[in-house]
Image 1 (tube, rainbow, N blue to C red):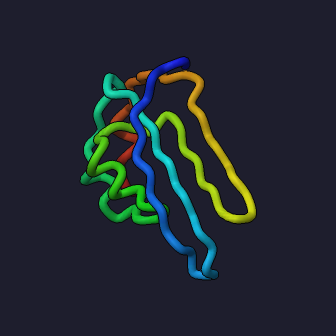
Image 2 (image 1 turned 120 degrees about the horizontal axis):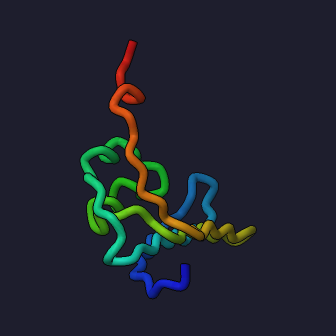
Length: 89
């Protein structure tokens, strides 16, 4: 997408004593999201990221002593979602 993104970096130690570095990157003009919808999603500091950025991440990476994985968005598509998809039966 070739955007200049802003990033938040989190450093932690995993339960098996590995150093972990997480990066979440977003573009300030990306659509906003409500961070309250993600308040219970605390894996990898994701709820903390959404509180700060209030936008979906366009790039994510996780790095340990053993590996590094990166995910990068290639396209953002805004779509109307039918309200019925959120109904519980």
